[in-house]
Image (cartoon, rainbow over all chains, first blue to last red; front, side, top):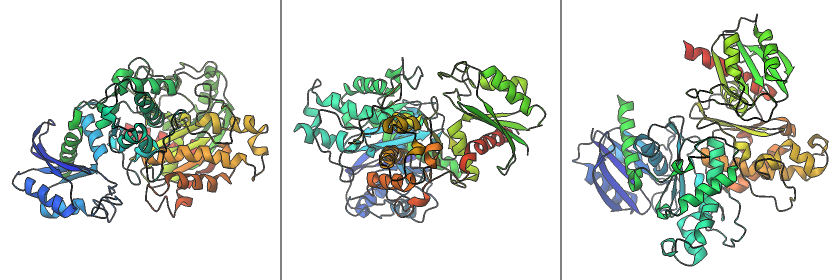
Length: 293
Length: 293
């Protein structure tokens, strides 16, 4: 198989070619500019690549309801030019192959379930913690779309008793994203996250917020794996702290060995590392091709 | 079709016979006693009923992982005699027909999706707010099981600024169930919920807690309908208050007309009323019969 993949982010687009084993054969990275010029570059890249299908995992919000007249559009993003843009339709017109289309985080969850940390499992949650927080939901062998698509980065959490930071989310102030995405670290402590030492009090506080959201998601959805990716999660000291917060919050209620003795292999980094998004887009492309057949 | 249904609760078992339209043709109610004697009564009821299949929606926690050696067991309930009891296996041995087996709230969500408030939709959340709080999750056309099964009644919420009540959950103290199930109303205000007037401050506080949990569940899962049942939700004044809390919490972020203009038909009572659980068990039975074929 020869599958095109697009990991469309707010600052860069990564385009690549992969195969049925999730192996990435080549890739390029492009800056995200106005949609027309960005997609012109994307299309130029794919034009002679002879891909059988393309998977797109993109920033959003996007319309992923295939019965909607605006299916394939970017919806209400503040990113200049992209709000209301027919991303998928533009691609289809210029390069007519089968397309997979989903959020960046759903794509990553799908890639992890196919080839990564959740390989062989029929459910997984994928969190990305970076400039924002997004959550991809794979449940009972399906990516969750629902009414719009999951936006689990914006759930409300309890405030840490020693935290006076207001939160930066323009919609909710101190929701999870407002308190625990990268910009919150910088604004709360006055220096960027990657300049904080590993024993800085920033990290237990970070784990407090993420651990709360993850505990509640485990209770609501009972996923078989929780995968934490994104720039902030390169701070590996967060993993044991988050696992401890989750166990403290659950307090033995959801009684399963994955949550009790084996939590080190339950809340984990992406098995595909920083390729989770691009591999996930390959997986979406393969899925689109197979549905076509 | 002639389908048996069991709605197994902690205080009573409702058993009935229904058809493929979700119509209940007859029913009985039995007190929940020790498992052997309760199931003897249940089996006596069904013995001559010539049902083609039986659906069981039950209190839990239960094992619903069909690959598990304890599939069909009640797991860790404090209810005397039931912890570790092979509920499904006992039924199968004595009355060998195809069985559907799920939690009471998943059954109710399934019944509502088949014949009730979420009819024709491929996703819905079903909350029951009574002596405890349970959440059934139906997503992308499937009931969510995952690692164990959803236990969304125990998510953490922020404390209401005027609330000094500690919460009664033995695991988490002031989780959603600890703060907003029936017993919390009684303990916080000194009288039972149904003795409080409709303009009592108990109700806005109740809506504050439920609205928070529901907002976060909407963000994480994007369900197409949210259905609120159980004894406490017979207090109909709660519905507009909860809808207002959800809109306040989301603050326009998940931009969909169901959440903005049409929330009165998005967060709703069960279409099947107090029959949601029993009808859901009929639906589980039908599903088991169809999978058999």
